[in-house]
Amino acid sequence: MSKVTVFPSFGLTGEVFIPSSKPHIQRALLLALLNENTTKIVNISWNVETENQINALKKFGLEILHKDGTTLLLRGVGRNLSYNGEIYAGGSGMLFRMCAALASLIDNEKIVIKCNESLFNRESVFDEDFCNYLDIHIERIENEKIIITKSETNIKKPLTVLNSTQFITFALFVTPFSKQNIVPIVMDGSKMGYIDMTIKSMSLLGSMVTYEQKHFKVTKYIPKDIEIKIPSDFTSLSYIASSILSSKGVSDVLIRNYYFNDTINERDLFKFYQSIGLIIKYDSNWNNLRIFRQSIRLWDGEFSLKELPSVAVNIIAASSNLKGKKIFSGVRGINNHKSQRAFIVNENIRTMGGSSVLIFDRVGMFESIYIEGKGPLNGGVELKSYGDHRICAANLIASLGAEKESIIYDIDKLNDGFPDYIDTLRNLGVHIK
Image (cartoon, rainbow, N blue to C red; front, side, top):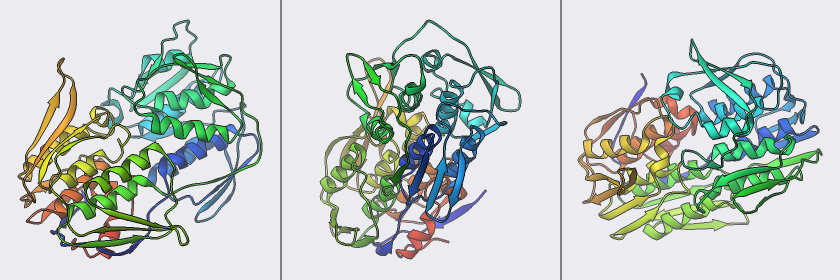
């Protein structure tokens, strides 16, 4: 089990680069498979999940024509998917859901997906309405494997975003090839960021997605040669910004070659950091983003993280070192990932000496986290990450602003998201050993 000791930080200074957006890469790679023509993906960056996704898509027929450090040229197969052997999803819910949707386009095959135990521990992985919409049957067998087969049903209930937006996302991606051209949904206007990202991605192949009375209407794809430029990863940006927010003292960090996402998620992220006192400036001539912290005002209030599931624990961890009473709502869904993230970060904050309370609604459903910030956490503890890269990052971030050094476990899991995060912190002056 890999571990590091993180010492208190008194400010971050320097220049860094961050990875490209993982959710944009995920959608670009899937779109490349569904395009009969070539897809050029520019400004791609690499992590374990991206490599696993490419390997999975190759099992469905994706062909790599050219690959270098930051560029991929791919040829897909459109509707003519094939199955070429067992697929590895590991603990990735995204990969599992994507493969399940693709399996719905293949007749007379048993699609075998190799997972791991963490995937089966999540209630959000299996969704009956998702399976019914796609006309598939999912069966768990021995050795942590799943078999997916076609199984038509007349039961078509609306899909929701309650556990994950990915059910709607991957249903949308395959709908241009299905007999029906609508996806029934129930939404309340929340969590639209990732679905909006999906709709924009599909439009690159001419598929128009419109909302009409409790369903999305979807048009066919138009195969053509396309080029997709991947923007910067706002989740990795949050790693840096939350590290600055958590640290004591003055920080001044320049992020080079930052390309905006133009997404709801990214806009909400900037809104939060600026509201709490970080100064963020962008130089459009050089594509440089500067984040500056001099002093953070006492901040009481409520902020919704419903559009920020991938960065929620970072923000909560950083805020635990600041004075002020804060309620973070819209965090129920962050428990539906590699671990019970909201519960773990709450407990780890308390272990470090902070005051963190889970809030439940009138029927007993987890809803929000309340942080009563009294200044820096005590630190001086050992924190488990439970094999979850988001929890690992949150533990690191919380430790930066604490009074004493702490030991963080499962550092190797950072390879799932921001592989260079530890080295980046060191380059910005953080003492980690």
